[in-house]
Each structure stands twice: as structure tokens, then as C-alpha cells.
Image (cartoon, rainbow, N blue to C red; front, side):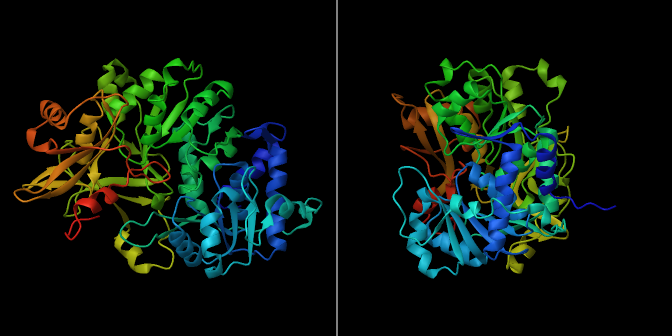
Length: 533
């Protein structure tokens, strides 16, 4: 009576029990679960008729639309493997990923077709399927319109088709990490790993049947952290969002009664600093999970105070499907001040129920003392860790050692077992032999009323080897000097940790998911030196 663990079973359940409930809202379009299920099945059959078989790879480059949701289910329920693409990557990176992933077909949004037009002659694709977008010029590619493609299977008898038997350990998706020091790596995620991660998503984010989930987080990023599966599993409603637009998001909070969303701290920052934020009357007090970079306590405080968001801090990596820690909120924390609560919520927290074991170890491989002081690396093992990097046994062996996945994140463990990241190993600043956490300095700077965004990096220093530099985006009309910023930091922390240099900029480099790209800032200062990434 063994039944494989696969998110595909949740689509079957949702169609069975919630056929007439609204499953997906995408701007003016709405689909019930029955209608969504029919479109998914049509896509599967059309792909099958076009030559896609079990085990084949299909690349998808779409924003957060109903088409993207359909692809997750339509491709994967066939036993084929979906390769979600970051549409903000360069043509060179896209060429590498599509070729390296052995994708035989590409489904792409017309808005993002330009880089594909540049590289199509280098790609070995059987077909290109294009989602048309109003206002965008017709592509020069010899592609097939998505709607026309799935319409050819509209009248097919799906029940007559033999059932695809899925092995829970087979690949579900092949997700590529951002390449910084090398080419992007293909993370092999299985049906089982995605199922377990989505179960964690449901349990720890409190997903219920009546939830209305806003897809602010790119679905291509670790499969929307599992949201593409978990919301369907509960029979909730997916609200699609083509791009992050703070005023629109605030409108959707009210007009669609959004109850849950996810996003990087950068997105949180955009929301709380939007002029409309203080005018918005949000009745539902949405739960918002944040991760991607350690959020400053001050930012969490603002999100809860200004917007009334119930912030939930989670932590993970693409290689772990992605969740491995979450900040469990206890009743005893309610008696603490708002500042103390925000400080606690800034910690990554403890293991989730289903993912397996996570701990912080020192250089000898021993678990660090639970004192909130001893620094070590976060490692994990269990149900959600990737199968490895696609066609890259050497990188896999570097990352998974002795049965543990090494994250590269440096952290401490508090007496209650809560883990808090101090820095990425590559972001730690070592000045005159002293370790300085860039995130700690950023946390102080986010409390400054004139600071909108900040990145702290190490820069070369003749005396100390390297020293911290703060690169800051100010609020409009702010008027603060470098000296004032440095003195402010020195009044809040040990002097050796305070930045010695400050630069004011218009914007900071980020990934499509809102992560700061500190390596790009370091490249400017470390040209010709050893430390770049």
C-alpha cells in the first residue's frame, strides 16, 4: 500500500474536493480548481503529443502568472522535469543553463523573449512555446502560441491515458543557483523533497483552506519556496503578481483580502517605505514569511508597526528545497518590548518539523556551544536536501560531506536552541584579526531614520588588511554625512565594528528575488586582489 510522496497528488485532491472554488486569480482572469486542472491536463497532453516523455527536461521562463503555475503541474505530473529560469539572467547565462540542463523544449513569456532571440541559434530545442503578452511586439522566433498549443488537447479523453507511476525519488525540478564565482549550478530537487518542504510550508506558515496567497516571491526561486504546491494542497487561492509593485500589492491586500505572502527583506523594505503604506487600511493582518538575507530587527519592527504584518522568519537554500529553519514564536515572547520581539524575530530559529536535522558546527565539526557567541557553520541533513548538482560530482562532493550539507552560512546558537546567522562565510569581515559581522553592522544602520537600504562589505586596508565600508541608499530628502553615519554606528556598537568608510548611492545591486549582490560591490574594491567573492 505504498504511496509515493509527490506534490502532484495535491492537484488531484484539490480538483476532487474544491472543483468550484477559485483556485487562481491573475489580474482580470479567474480559474476554479476544475478549470485549472483541465488546463494543466491539456498542457500535459500537448507536451506529450509534441514528444515530451517521462524524464525529459522542459525549461520555463515565465513571471508569476497562471501559466507558470500550470507549468509546474502540467510538466511534472507527466514525470518530466521542469527547469524554472530566472528571467533576469543574461543571455549568456540562459544559454548555459538551457544547454547544460538538457532541456528539449522552452516555454517563455513574450516580455522576456529578447535574450532568447540572441541565443536561439545556439540552442538544441525541439520547440519553443510562447505566452503572448498584450503590448509586446511579435517575436522573430518560430514559436508556438501557448493557448493554441494546449487547445489541441482540449477534447482529448484524459482518463483513457495510462497513469504515470512516479518514483518519489525522481527529479521534479532542476533549479539553477545564481552564478557568482562560477557557472550556475543545477540543483536536483525530487518529488519527495518538494513534498516534505511544502508540508513544512503548510504547517509552519499555518496554511488553511481559506487562505488567499499572494505570489510576491518569484515562483522560479526554489519553486516559490514551496508555495506553488502548499496552497493547492490546502485548497487555498493563488493570487498571481506579474512583478513586485508596492502600491499594487497594498491594493491587493485590501481588495483581495490577502492573508499570506512571502518575500525577501528587500520586498518588505519596499512595502514599508512606500508612501501609500501609512494610508492603507489592512484588515486581514497578513502573515508574511521572509528570508533570503538576514532581515534587520528594525525592518521587522516597521513591517509589524506600519503595515500590521505578522512577520515569520524562515531560512533555507535552493539546495534544501528550501526551508530548514523557522522562527517559532512563543507566548513568552509577547511580554517583551516591541524592540526585543523584533530582535528575536530576526533570528533564523529552529528546525522545522519535517525537514531533518540542522545544527551549527565549529571548524572541528563539533556542535558549537549554545551561548549565542561561538561562531560556526550551519549544516543540515534529512528529507529536503538536494540529490546533488546536475552533472557536477565535484561540486556535489564539496557541498555534501559525511552525509551533511554545508551551507556556507556562519551562525551562533542561543541557549534556547535558536540559530542566528552572523554572516555568509564570504561576507565575514576580518579586520586586524577581529571578526566583524556585516549583517550586525547593517542591522544598526537600518535603525537610522535616514537609511533606506544598506550593504556593508570588506574593503582593502593597508593597516588592518580589510575594513568595513557601508554603501547606503538614503531616503529622499535625507541629509546626512559620512562622518555622522560613522559616529552613529560607534554610538551603537564597538568602535572596531563601525564602518570606517561610507558611500551614498542611488541603488544597490540585487538578484531577481531581492538578495543583495555584495560580490558586485566587492569587485569594485578588490580588483587585482585575492578577495573578490
